[in-house]
Amino acid sequence: MSRALHIHQAGPGVTVQDLGRPGYLAYGLSRGGAADRLAIHEGAALLGQGAETAALEMAGMGGTFIASEDMRIALTGAPMRASIDGAPVAWNASHLLPAGARLTIGPATAGVYGYLHLGGGIATPEVLGARSAHLAAGIGAPLVAGDSLPIGPDRGQETGLLLDPEDRFAGGEVRVVAGYQTPMFPDDEVTRFEQTRFTRDARGNRMGVRLAPDGAGFAARAGLTVLSEAIVPGDIQITGDGAPFVLMAECQTTGGYPRIGAVLPCDLPRVAQAAPGTVLRLRFVAPDEALAAERRAAEARATLRRRLTHLTRDPHDIRDLLSYQLISGAIAGNEEE
Image (cartoon, rainbow, N blue to C red; front, top):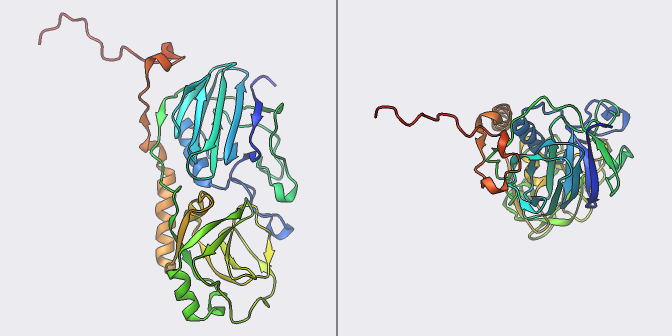
C-alpha cells in the first residue's frame, strides 16, 4: 500500500461511500451510497475527477487523518471545523495534505453529513460494483482508529479551489410528488400535510428520517393494511404513529406502510442534511414541475466545475507555497507607460 490514508481517530459514523450500487433491488439490496449524493459531485468537481470516485462520509463529526504522502483533498457537505497541523482550512474547497501532516475534522456546524475526498479516490475493493459501505446489508463497516485506506493514483495537481455550494443545511421547502398510494389519504389529509410544519426528529439514520408533525399525525383510509411493495429512497411512509418517515439511501427494499408521496431526488440531500430540530415543509408539485427541477439539478451537477473560484489564502498558511504560480504577468519595470 504505497498511497494510504491512515485513520488516527474517527467519529462513530465515518464510512467509505460513493454513488452506491443500483440494480440489486430485486435481490433485496437497496442502492445505498452517500446520504448526500450532491456532495459527492461537488468533491469530484473540486478535484477534477469522476463522480464515481469513493470518498469518506462523516456523520456528525469527522476524525483525525494522516496521509502517507502528499495528497490533494477536498471537503464538502455539512460544514465541519477542519485544520491541517492546527492551521484552519476552508470547507467546500480543495487543499494539499502534505505527507505526515495531521488533518483534523471536528463536529458539524450545520447539517449532518460531511465528506472528505482524496485525489485518486479511495481504492478499497469493489463489492457488487461499488466501494460504498451498506451497513444495513452488512457490507463494509464504520472506520476506526488504526484503519488504513488505499488511495488511487491522482492524475490532477491543482488545489486551492473554492465552491459556493447549494444551501441545503438549514431545512426549508422540500418538493414531493404524488404516487399511486396518495389517493389512499383523504384530500383534507393531503392538504393538511402540505400545510404542516415538520421538525426533523432525533430518530434518523442512513435508512430513514422521521419527521415530527406540528400537530396530529396522518392516516390513510386503509389504515396500515396495505400490501408490502417495493420502496426506494425518497418514499414517504406514514408509520403507525401517523408521523412521516422519509426513506434514505440504506432503506429496506419492501415496505407495507402507506406512502403519501415521494421526495424529489434532487431535494433528498436537503432532508439528509437536516439536523435534529430542523424545520421542513413538504410541498406537492406536478410531474412536469418535478421533471423540470430534476433537469435543472442534473445540469447544475454537470457544470459544477464552471462555478469554481480560487481560494484566497494567507501565504503564511500555505505549506506548498513554492508550487503556486506567483509571478504570472510580471514585468521588467522599465516599460513605457
